[in-house]
Image (tube, rainbow, N blue to C red; front, side, top):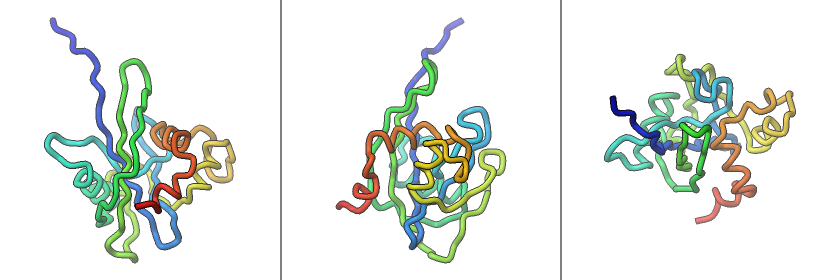
Length: 157
């Protein structure tokens, strides 16, 4: 019997903002990050661009039609010795400002909300008014550690 070595996977996270600068985040379901805040996103498929992945995953998970506009950054996310991801963060623009996210994959996400970066930082810091402490998906935690001024990165060209 041949055992396969663990491989590094590629995830794509879509950062979708509204006119107030809030972002779509949801609560994950399942064994990988269960109960943690996440952005829409998923695995990059063979032959797919990371822009196409961000647009596809956002539509599949939230019903939002978006246009991927900018590669922001990436993170190196080691969840365990057997689970290692590179996460690509893509800034996306909602094409219909009145469209709201819906839970289209209830087995993967319990709800979608609009949150600010300050809201996300408050959850990481343990401010339970914004969510349970430690309940932010590792790629987002790593993103904020590596890019503390993420707002400026999102505005730069």
